Image 1 (tube, each protein chain N blue to C red):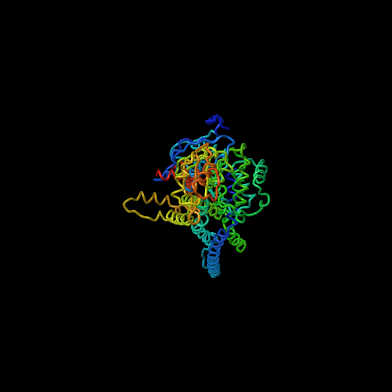
Image 2 (cartoon, rainbow over the protein chains, first blue to last red; image 1 turned 90 degrees about the vertical axis):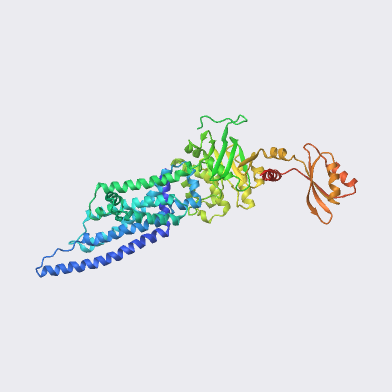
Length: 262
Length: 329
């Protein structure tokens, strides 16, 4: 099947390309630094609360999941935004500029197969990153057992949230890449687009409160908060999945436009 | 399979049928009202200078771009409404063979075969056949980036041949190759006559006369001439061309040459030495004025230094067609 063939080729390209590893390494370097910081603060706090306890003063012990794990993943949620343009920009723009797209689309392949093959490959890179991120909860678990182990359901909700956001951002990046031959342009458009998508809830127009509500509900950042607190709400799933489909649909139509734009 | 193959003028089913094709990019008309057809098993050369509209026409045939007006049918399928079927029928080598440079030859061909939807069980055979036909056995494990231009072109050709398509569309298949490689590719294409329908575009003349059974000359988006290479030569120029190097004042020689019966046109090709010139004499069709020409030159006291006869080459036909068009414009 064509989608499978494209998926395999694209995934291989990702994992053979140094830029993929540089992006992943940078993200995990930053996450590691934050992790180290929060961990130090956390041990400090828990030590102090223990001492307070010995002196008979009751104080709530800090929660490792809320403080450390959520802190680290919060960073990952933000860093994904910057990693997507670097990973997605070449997907179609490069094929366009090198002329290989002409070879592919003149084969009996549907545009949708091509789009999905590339999209799923990029999402797989995201899955790989999410799997790598389990390093942090595992470390917490290893160091903290038996007393302060992570709450795995919350970790699960963070992973699901990351996956959905990565999928939606990837679809946006692929859409931008389908519109130009210039990789840099695709990358910049993706970065700016994703930033705007996250910030659009913050724009306030005083005369139109309804518009504000709509903008807020449509912004990407609005739908990440639930995942960070361990809440899985249907509307967040629907939001990200629908946005992904919308962007992929536009990408496939952009490719197809070549055929009907007379 | 095609249900209603369109009959070509000759009665044989046309594999490719282009009718009143027009393509406009913004303000420029790249292709203007082009019509031709290619019979099954025929090798057709699409000849024209760069920018004549060859690539655009081929891209329309392969469903890469749509036509502004007119229709193209390949194997009986309409490129606009039955794009998938058309693409299943053709093998296409775009200009300068864009390949995935980071892949190995074998992986690349397997990938393209998979993309073209060949079943897994047959893929080995299909890829093996293409490798054999294009002589790629020795480079099968090499990364395409490291291959010479000639081999890359062959990989592109092998890709087009995967699954043995009925129609091959090759855009400038020999451009940028050295003479030995060109000869190899030509042999390969010539060997396909009768088995496959091939359209190849080129701006190199010997290529068409050597590989093609029929030629369409296109210039500025127009079809200027069409036919077999021999037919074109005889139609445009007549086959008789005499080149004579004569010593004598040009003004005196010209009327003498013109007076010889059977001579159609006389021009100076270039001066030779101080007072000699290479004359180019065109004979009327079916006439042989050579003995009379020699005699007339000698009799009038000029010295004949050299005399050659040559048929009007396809190159002459081409240049004549193109330049006539330019004068009109």
